[in-house]
Image (cartoon, rainbow, N blue to C red; front, side, top):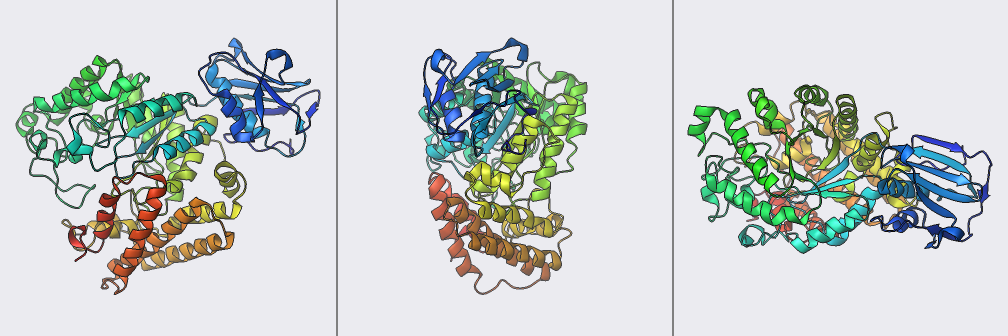
Length: 605
């Protein structure tokens, strides 16, 4: 077995074939493909191994695909190599595709191809990734295809693009015109491309809270719960935040959005958001909330959105945080709807919450996070713990999906590659189960860099682990980030940074600096010219700068004289890197928030 390559995710069973047959590398690679299976099996075989597979008839094929009902699960597969042939047996086309990806990985091993039997099936049937494209990065089409390819390699089968405003809805150009929105045609292209990779794209559009990108415009302000606005975590100025549940025109807007968005998708699901309705009852719905209670009004609105979702032939998925706050409305939960538990700390009580939803008979999903947003360098231990605990809770209490969320709160300053560790760890946990080993630098190198960038992968591991040295007590972020988010001149400065970083110490901040310098030395020593090396270098630069602001804050010191000149360098670097993978829309909004770390209003005087 030592001659077999390590496989990610790890299959359930890998054993040598009895006959010990070997196939020397360099021979012709011929495959008989099943007709009209809907998946790009040739890509699956060729992508991982780089071998020149050619489609031929069954008689002359080295590799064949077979349907085997005994495998039960349409994602399960069995690979048999021996006796002069290779065969991928599966319960359905998805199993063929996953088996093809595994075989491609296995064929990368050095030396002759030895006989083997690989048997495998997923621990969880639906394994998803949700990318925030609203705050503030909208990826280019090339980047979205690259992402889908990577997810397919790791056996994800579910993708969501989180929308607040950057979709090109007809008659709503004022909302999305500066965001480089994704168009209906582009969305259809993504759905089709992902489907060929065995990935279902699920529509996602918030429909209640988080509507501030709409409500800041005069044309929509009348729909707001609080038209005068409120302070919230996603901008430094007061803004209207949520739709007013008491205004029937709110649902008219939702109906318009759903009518344009949902017909573009083949998925039976629609994620309607409906989380963090933090202003509910504080404005236009105050009177009705006093009469019926916030839980009752929330459920009335949810039922109305459920009805609209069903109108377009979908099942409604929604974030479960508000539902859990109001157990008095559990009995009104509409059949067919799917609440999604979310929590992004390693000790979040996902298992307890899962038990609650299981006990009321609800189908539910669970969503941990990448721990990359609001961190600048990632949160290593939290990331691993949050994902592992979510996988355990999903398996223990019968969740029907596990979805990894990758948010971009407050500017999306973190580059895409900062999420790689989480994407890999989640893939292993969701497919192979919580017993799967934690990814190391070698696994990062093989998965994301084709085995050619070990020192770069080691530098990434050092960066991800750096924030563990802070010990700052921060939740959903780190003290350096929060020093930028809540500078002394912000509208709600009264103890916000201290409250969020309540165990901050100068010793921890110094240790973080040391880890960042150690990471930079490893990166410099790698000599890597990979684009991810630039993103890693930027992450170190912005984290060092932010940590200095945290040290000034923690010690009551004035801002250093060179802080703004260094910030201008960071701005230029962010703009340059942004354009490599992301559309221009959203960049200025991200830079505005970056400048706000030193300048009121985000404007340099």
